[in-house]
Length: 87
Image (tube, rainbow, N blue to C red; front, side):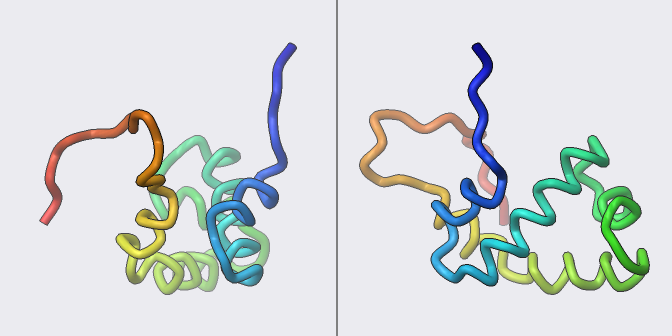
């Protein structure tokens, strides 16, 4: 049996602010629909004007390190990730 959770519920578990969780879930859903990590491809799949959606995602991702740190669990037995350092 396949198990899944709603994207908004996943986002709420990882983002403290409900408004930020809502925005994150919308972007995650559009990434899945676009099947691409490119902002331009994702913006095409978002409601409203493509330019406005693109700018919205840029503002949301201004500080990606802060958002990514929320997804990291210090108490986890192991972490799957890429060890490449990004400067």
